[in-house]
Image 1 (cartoon, rainbow, N blue to C red):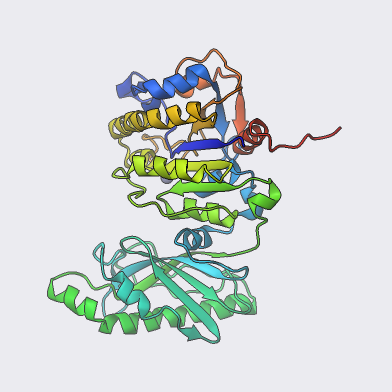
Image 2 (image 1 turned 120 degrees about the horizontal axis):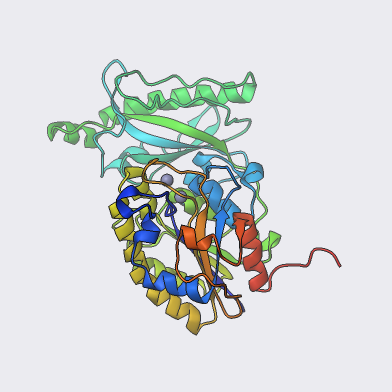
Length: 410
Ligand code: ZN
Ligand code: ZN
């Protein structure tokens, strides 16, 4: 069985940085293992979603598995809920949630409830499983002040506004229907009721009494955003006849995996921040390759440094990834596994956000063509044998390498 690993350095692509002599963080970093892959393999530039499109991590990962997000993207709420391990059914409406602090006039003091770190499980139990107008409430805390909310029942809609005003010092927003349908009205009404129930129950909760005694802000409200409705998506095994898996510390990336019918386990120590355990992720990849054709691993930290506008941190972290890559490359060569190293989008430190700039890509494998590129990086990849391709194009190429693609025509 031919297999492939897609290694995603999240947000690693960048723009020219003056302090680095107009090199990008990847180009400026010392990366002997990535360079070895570039030198002995094929290279290219990739627009994950398409030229001129600024990808989110979720939409880019959908493309990398051959699903057009314009057709299948369910919104952030469902992806986050799936990533947190909730089994969604078509018709469920899911939201991203913050535990927050309000005063007696429902004015927001802190959108993150004093960056609450523990006790959210206890609060979640106070509303998880309740029913409002025949609609079931599923509520699960995730990391720190975050949680996911799912409404399950008949005739719901994701066309409702956020209750999260995204700023502090103002009252919690009333959820309003964004279209004149009974479904949107019903969903907005249920949400507004749920927010009040949460406020009442959380305010009396033991953990909040203790927090107040310690001088900490109570988590006494939920703020909802990112409504999306789950719909059926043909699983990857049916659509492309492959078994796929995703290893990531980021809930929405795991959520993409689960949406497409893949395995996306929570790996211990895989945090989605610079303290993540890269070795544990590599172990998980190797384990998953036993019964999967394509395994994607996502390392989030380069994106975090990009958002923070920290080119030196980004460069150093890319060097750290390079050190860990050695073991994965040895494994790939020894086991005739294809290894593709790339990024899901650029996150230029100067922009502090994602950009449409294409990302470098290098791939190595048993019979992959070799081009004359000798180093891994944006400027080198531009001369690569794959040219400039899209995420869908890369996925199709990988399918062909592992003998899972079908001929188009006679
Ligand atoms: Zn990303
Ligand atoms: Zn990002």
